[in-house]
Length: 77
Image (tube, rainbow, N blue to C red; front, side, top):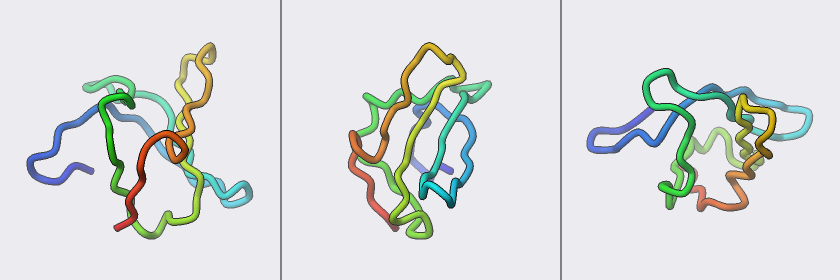
């Protein structure tokens, strides 16, 4: 969810994988498309998800998974 003044850089769905300790992001928003990761310098995430690896996978199976928590600074609030 965006806070006032923030801009949407894409969207999709999420699910928690408690077995592998990952927050799995996938898909695309019908209005905004897939996330544009190169436009995101820092990602604010609820402290509830602290300790989970964050990974994005496109619905386009030809693309590799994008390791969000390895390539983007994640701040837990």
